[in-house]
Image (cartoon, rainbow, N blue to C red; front, side, top):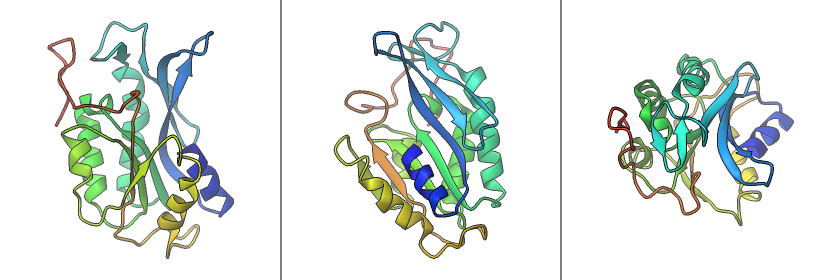
Length: 201
């Protein structure tokens, strides 16, 4: 998604939304994930190995209190229709624990108007599966081999018929379906280890 955002900016577009990135430890091992708004105003932890208070996905604790104040305002802004191009990274198992995220993202995916790129886990139920069935959505599979070359194709589809700084008027919402954060992708929504936390589906 970061490469797509770079290409959009090179063409004169200002993408809005948020992106997630891996956190690497001193030995290069993955120890968590961060989330940041594309306007640079907010950033924080999405999940960490060190956390204890929150839902768990594998070895990671999802830090709800840190990432919801980043993602939810970005989604609220996107729903106003004032953006040129939207990039939402990602719709994954960790994000499905948030009622607010699921509700806003569902409305955004069904909305018409602004071009939208949303990365989504390759496997999973609930909103992950629902997003792939929405009429007008274009699914592009992102793999390790094509993740660099496919960025240009995604940008071409996003900006087709849209002028920079004039906003989008399109009914198409491209969604790139990738392997997500796990080595082999998500196998399903599943249940977290703490029973008081349940993914929203």
